[in-house]
Image (cartoon, rainbow over all chains, first blue to last red; front, side, top):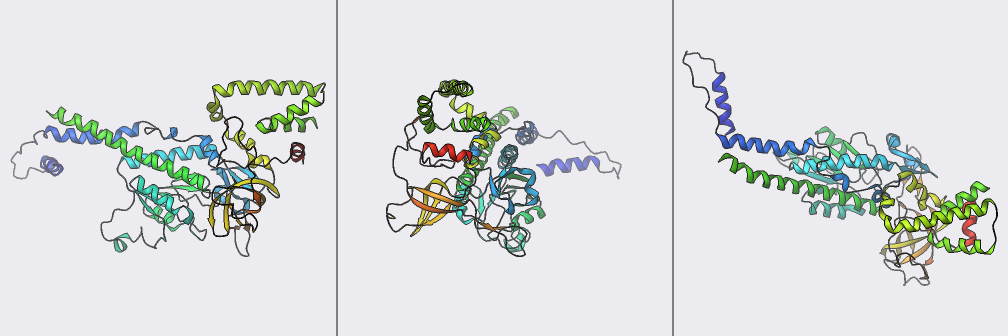
Length: 260
Length: 195
């Protein structure tokens, strides 16, 4: 149907070599434009409001505080680039500024919800063995993917050969910890930046936030904090997907009735 | 000295277990001048808080800023962690190793004591003396410290089930989000803040 419209458009612009005039394209049949309009509307409507999915209602400062999100490592473990996100240092322990965390978390959850709304593939990555099971169950419960094992070298950059041709790469990668088992930055952070895949990452005071698209400064070592993040991501992804189903149902009901 | 006293009273007024000790102290010695006026003001404030607690218990917590939440948290109030007695809860057991969470960033791992060790299972509360909240060390040639992702504490023993119930709700919370610094004696608490 799109091809038909395209050829009609081409016919219009073909130079009249033989002198014959060609009939201008008749108006495209009504149901097709309606469908395109409907799908356009479904995709554009969430972009009009800043917080369409109301993700800021899912968490509060008190929740973050009670989950010990503000506790950072010792100041000797601090990464230089995390200094803007720190509130201060108390007796050699870094304290992460929760006001900044609130803003960053809201942006990250909003982005995640939009990606889920548009049917994007989301990959959870974490190399912490303590939380490997939690991350995998979170991914399963929201119908997305998780990779919490050893990351083979070219998984993203050499995907055509390693995973097979025409493999769909993730549209968003969520890191629940950006460090691997030897306290170096996870290879996937760099590879996702190379492959133009946006990333959301929880960055602790010893992590490098520079390559991450939506960094969320916060504690990634305490089980309470990890459970909070997993719960928040699961709820936002489910919200995004449910909203999409709801919009399709609403518009799907209205579109055929308009074409009649 | 007056400023220190004021800080002490403000900080401790939020802990319900200390209210009884303060009221007993004030009843014993008659106060005058600034002390009397201050006591009156703190009591008025306490009454106001208790009356509004029923109305807006949750919302007052929501409006607090991060700075004030932090200032009143046990982590800041505790001061240096060395030799501080806290209460922890065992969340994992591997034969003789007990993994204990005491409300800090990391857990600590302690060996099961020979005497009375069988009573300590998953979920039991224990008393610990903290040595370090995070074990880190700088190795030669490294840019940053290497961390063990663990705290170090000495296991003092199980928490005796006294009246450790919350007087307001009447229930004992199993998992508390913050450090629970054990109150040894009412007089010693006052000494602790001044130190």
